[in-house]
Length: 225
Length: 145
Image (cartoon, each protein chain N blue to C red):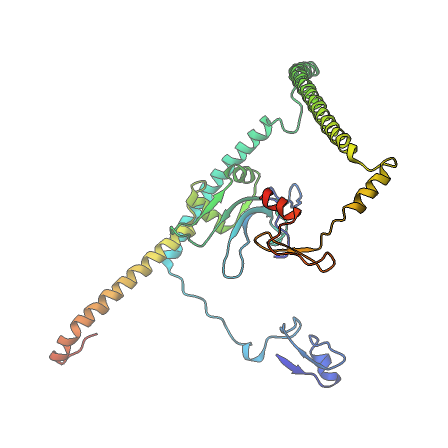
């Protein structure tokens, strides 16, 4: 319901409307206040009683009387049962003497110790097994490392041996002049073209090539293929 | 239902000698009722923390046309033995379940349903007879209805 409240009087009359700034609001809950009297239109209204079937009423009365009696009986039975349960229950009090409790405790301790001994035995066996496994693992790893090292040494020695063989043809200070003389006496020109038949075509600097003549290089190529 | 779902064992606090009642607490949603059967202090509102939940009741039939009800009979016996009250719907359910005598309201509902069915059947047969009779009465010229 949307209501526009205008003026002080309206605000006093309807206490459910409280709004200072806009004087405009929705009234979601609206009931006649308790102190207002019965509405004029309802003053002499007598609500009509619903007609009751007298047979049904009597039958219901009888049933309810029976039901109450039976329910009382059942409830008293359940109350006795609850009382018995309360008395026989050991939930909230001690039922053992100190000696019995001590005996119970000793029994528990003995059982616990037996369990501990058993588990210790199992643990010992497991640890031994694990240690043996670890030893074997370490031995295997050491052996593998040794083999690998040997292989590496052999490989290096092979390299050294090849290098020693190659060092015979090295140019040293002693034979440097001889090597220079040899190089000057035998110039090698690598600037040439070659076709699919293996003919070599020298460049201008090396002089015109003669077709059909096979150079030393071409002879090497053809003999090699 | 702004309260969080309580433990089935219940978290409600109660006085030792206050009036307890076994009743429904509605835990469904809109247009889908589902009830917990709970024991709580009689004066407390429906969705306050319960002392203990004692069962459930689904008022809508399932796909096999069964109404599912669950009871913790051990605890119901305990609470009834400790003087808890019963709401009528719970008393009806417990009567049908067999712990308590059948509630009179169950009988009443049954005979009212029966009477309504009989009346509907009588009406249907009467209207059927009328429909059969109608052409004859038209011919005779005197309608009795």
